[in-house]
Amino acid sequence: MRNVLLFIRRYHTFLLFLLLQILSWWFLASFNRFHEARFLTAAQEVTGSINSRYDRVEDFFQLRAENERVHQLNDSLLQLLPANTLLVDTQQIEKEEITLDSVKRLRRYVYRPATVIYNTVNEEKNYFQIDRGSAQGIRENMAVLNSDGSAVGVIVFVSPNFAQAMSLLHVQQRVNAALKKTGDFGTLEWDGAHPDRLILKGIPKSLFLKIGDTVVTSTYSFNFPPGKMLGTVSALSTDKRTNFHVIEVKPAANFRNLQQVFVVENLQMDEQVNLNREARKRIEDPKNRKP
Image (tube, rainbow, N blue to C red; front, top):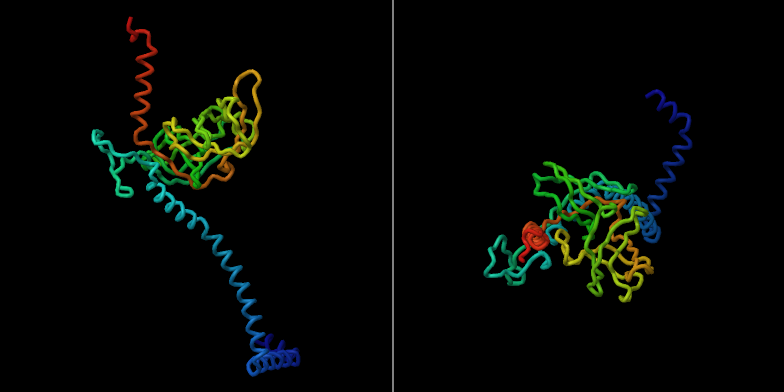
């Protein structure tokens, strides 16, 4: 307290001047409309700037929660897409029937939200891990989509509460892909060279292509829903030894920043895979061939 009194005594002249100056500004702003308007405008600018900066800081700390809310909303909307269902066949055993636009359909794809907790992009065999496992309905061979709906990988190993996915940036990954504008299909793979470049093979030279053409998941894929974004054509060349294009594709997903994803279950996948396996076994096994 003594130091405060000594400070006031030492600088009392300056403090009195400052007090009178503030008082004069208050009189000027209170009894003069022009100066009052200018004062209020300046004060509003200052407080608005402070509030704006505070709001940005607050938004930054709430961004994760907001992303999770948006991701859950997207999950609800994705479940209602007509592409996830089939028209009900009266001769088919109904598993889960839903109504869309007054038409009964049989659900085929189910989406489950998840968060990426581990990811690599700089190796030849890249994986990412999510915080959902068998306890949450995740199984091997399920497709994984980014938050924007683009394809990013396939589940290859599952524990009770976590799952490991093989990224599209894996030299052993093969995805059935198609050109959106023509429907011609091929195989999308990665050569291990650069995380911003995939290779589309199996497209004939007779097909006219241009930079920017869209590449999507094919209808022939067992795990990926058809029509999901894979990327866009970024470079074209021809292989003189074959009748096919060599097509470079820029991935739609940013693999360096995978955060929120969807795990997609094809409810008819087991039936499709078993049918394909049994058909091949019956036809290709010499013991089953008829004379």
